[in-house]
Amino acid sequence: MKDKDKEVGKLIKEEERRQKDTINLIASENFVSQNGREAIGSVFCNKYSEGYPGKRYYAGNEVVDTLEQLTQNRALKLYKLSPKKWGVNVQALSGAAANFWAYFALVPLGEKIMGQELSHGGHLTHGAPVSHTSKIWTWVHYPVDSSTHRFEYDAIMELAKKEKPRLIVAGASAYSRIIDFKKFRKIADTVGAYLMVDMAHIAGLIAGGIHPSPFPYADIVTTTTHKTLRGTRGALILFKKEFEKEINKSVFPAGQGGPHDHQTAAIAVALNEAMRPSFKIYVRQIVQNAKALAGFLKAKGYAIITGGTDNHLFLIDVTKKGMSGNDAQNLLEHAGITVNKNGIPYDTRKPMDPSGIRIGTPAVTTRGMREKEMRAISEMIDDILMERIRPEIMKARVKKFVKKFPTP
Ligand SMILES: Cc1ncc(COP(=O)(O)O)c(C=O)c1O
Picture 1 (tube, protein in one colour):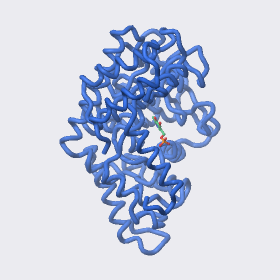
Picture 2 (cartoon, protein in one colour):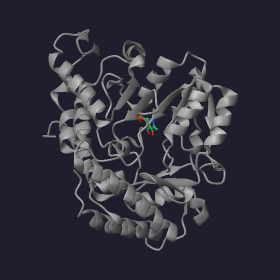
Picture 3 (cartoon, protein in one colour):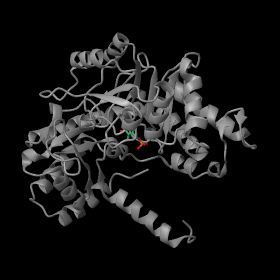
Picture 4 (cartoon, protein in one colour):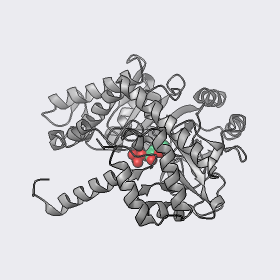
C-alpha cells in the first residue's frame, strides 16, 4: 500500500511477515496465487450486479455477465459436469451462506435434516445448537463409531430409517477418512431424502482426483473455494438442473443482495489453476504430506484419531500427552507453528478447551514442502509440546526453516 493508509499498510506488512515466518498447519487455510489476489483486488470490486447474467437490476453488467458465465463454465468443467445435467451458482458469499441457501431451497422450515455431529467432525452449519440452522430446521445427527471413530454406514442407515429426514448432509470439517458418497446415496434413497454434499474441505482433493467425487451421487454439492481448492474466500453451490430455479432464487433475491464480483473473478482464477496438471500433483502431495506427518507423530507416541489419514488433515488427542488442545495450540503458536484446537469424537472436555488439535497440510504443501520437511516439522512439534526447547528459540528456528519455502 503506497503510503495512503499507513495504519492498514503496516498491518498488511505485519500479517505478511507472520504468514511468511511461520509454519501454517491450519487445515482450512492456504496461500492464494498472485493472480487470485490480483483478481480480488481488481476493479470488479466497484460493481453492483444484483441478479444473474442477462437479468440484472443494474446497468453496466456486460463484462460481469461474461465473468460470471466464465466462472460457472470453469466450475462445471473442473468437476467434469455436463451443463445439460448440472448447474452452478457462484454468488454465495461464503460456505456458511451457501449451506443456508441450499437448505432454504430444498427443505421447508421446521422439517428434518440429518448431518454429521459437530463434535464428531461436522460443521456448525450442519445443525449445531449454536448455529441458526438448528433453529430453522429440526436436526438429527449421525456420529462416528465410538471405537474406530469412522463412519459406521449401517448405523447411519438405521438412524435415517428411524428419523426419515428430508435431506442428508455428508461432508465434514474434521474427518480424516474417505467419505463413501455411494453409501450416503443409498441411505438417502432408502428414506426418500435429498443428498447434499458439503465438500468444502476436500474440494481440491476431489478436483485433483485424489478423493472420490460426490457428483455421481449427490443432488446438491456446496463448497468453499479457499481450502484445498486454494482460491480466495468464496463458495459454490452446484446442483442438478432440476433444482436450478429454487437454488438461484434462494441465493438472490431471497438470501443475498449483489454478488461480490471481485470474489467471482478470483474464484474463476482458482478454478482455472485447479484444472492444470500441476494441481493434481499438488493435491497428491498434500495427502502424502498429511500421511507422512501423521505417521511421524504417531511414531513419537501421539494418539492420531482413526490412526492416520486419507486426506489433508488429521486430529491428535493431546490429552494422552498430558495437555489440553488449548495448551498444545498455545505452545505451538508461541513457537511459530499454527494449528487449531479441536474437539475429538466423544470428547469429554469443553469446546473452548477440547482434547485435540487439528493438523492440515494444504498450506505447507503450497510452499513446496514434502515428506522430508514433514519429518522435521514432526520433530519441532514434539520438541515444543514436550517442552524440550523454549518456544522463542524454536520460533527463530522455524523462521530459518521456512525461508527456503517461498509463499506465492
Ligand atoms: C465443511 C464446511 N462447510 C462450510 C464451512 C463454512 O465456510 P465459510 O467459513 O466460508 O463460511 C466450513 C468452514 O470451515 C466447512 O469446514
